Length: 420
Ligand code: LLP
Image (cartoon, rainbow, N blue to C red; front, side):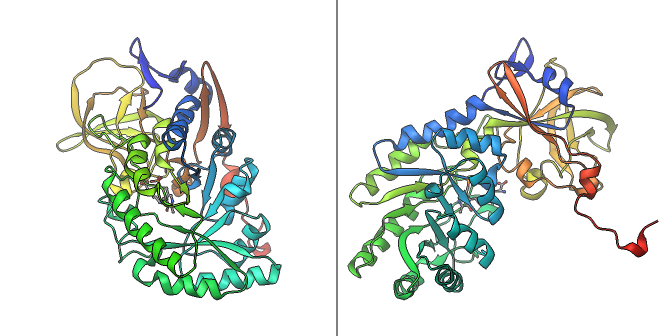
């Protein structure tokens, strides 16, 4: 579901014509819909209503602090994976007791920062990390709340780069070795076992992998219980897919709840869910301008002003994003590659796509760009990172300025011998 629709053949973000926003900000531009963000968050809240749960938005999908404030005000917590994400979560008013911290490579500095902030729990990925957390907690004279991230060896049936729950992946502790790790955790003086965590991948389009993984994890928590280790929080990770083209129909949070709640009912645990993409993905678009058209050997190249530095998903995952004109004209469709200005053959937003033949200067909207869009953008080719706008009803707000050329050298230092 989203709120980017045509009215009289013109694309609107909620009630604002996209063209009107671009006149003020220029392109490339990310636009987000306030209404869509809330609809998506509330879909989770309603789906899991009645069962104790915390929704911890995965910041990596979109860490703009205005977006975080919207979600936080509507009750969301945060799943963070770095000191930087924790900083952004705190800055946006997300309560510490709704923050969980994952990732295989937490540094001691980051661990101390999280302990000082009294986050709900660390999702720990190895025994080395467990020892490091125990050490830092001892130094700070606190008990560190932890969950172990177990790897349930379940195929999420998604793109290999965004699948995480198989034995061969670097994530988590293999479930058949996790018992030893829990025993170790229970012996460490500065560790408090609070929960268990799993996350099997992203853009998952069926509920079965979630159910299978959860069953394995629950059977394991029963085993822990018999050893006197109680689990208060079960963090089932994120991963619910979204529709990137009209054909896909991934499950709704309601379907996920219907599939997992019956299995959870008899276990007295608080559920944590870490959605990222399914909250912000379809709440955002990337608007780009057609710079030039160029005849290729067997297709057209539509050269636009957004590149792989702005949206890298098509380049690295071969991801499909629907691309539509901001002003619909019903022209002939032509086979095109929609490419950016970057000096790489991998710089494309779409390949072999039949689209209405655009004209120079025209605006195109790349749909489903609200998750892993801006957050994965870079300054490659010394391109300034795009601006971001939030639309709420009839109003719009710039929530991040486009970078300036000076931003490109911010933080650089020139040694004296090179000056002058
Ligand atoms: N929790 C953990 C521990 C994660 O690693 C992730 C995503 C999430 C939650 C959120 O997953 P989501 O609900 O967004 O699927 N850059 C890739 C996606 C990488 C996902 C990494 N982990 C992409 O653009 O498709």
